[in-house]
Image 1 (tube, rainbow, N blue to C red):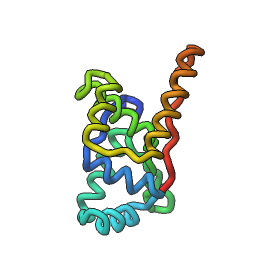
Image 2 (image 1 turned 180 degrees about the vertical axis):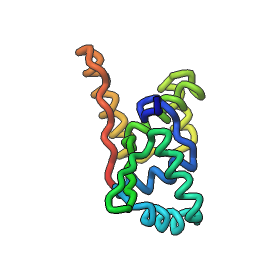
Image 3 (image 1 turned 135 degrees about the vertical axis):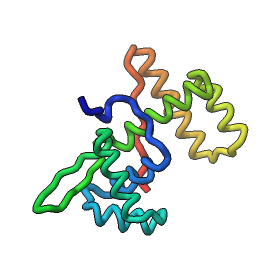
Image 4 (image 1 turned 180 degrees about the horizontal axis):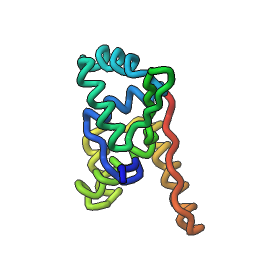
Length: 144
C-alpha cells in the first residue's frame, strides 16, 4: 500500500521548497518545476526530477501524464502541511502549551498593534467556540 498525504508525515526543508513551487502554481510540468527551482534555489534538473519522483512515491505529489508530458500537483494543501508542522513543533518544543509558545514569541519579537488586535480576535473566537463546545475554527491564511 502506498503512503498517502494523510499519514501525518512532516515535510523536510527540501520537500517544502518543492511544495512551495507547486503551491504557487499547479499543475506544473517537470520542466516548469525544474526552471522554477533552478531560479529560486539553484537546483539542477536531476535533483528536481528525483525529488518529484520520490515525493510522488510518498504520496505528497500527484503526477498525471498527457501526451508524454508529466504534470505535477500537490496532494497536500499548504494549510494542512503548516498545521502538521505547527502541531509537531508545539508538542515537541512547548509540550503542547500554546501559552508558552505565545510567551516565547512575544519575548523575542515586538508585535504591532494590528497583530495584537488580530490575536485578541482569535482568542475571542476560540473562547466563544469553546463555550459552545465547538472545535476551534482554523485561521485563514492571509494573501500576499
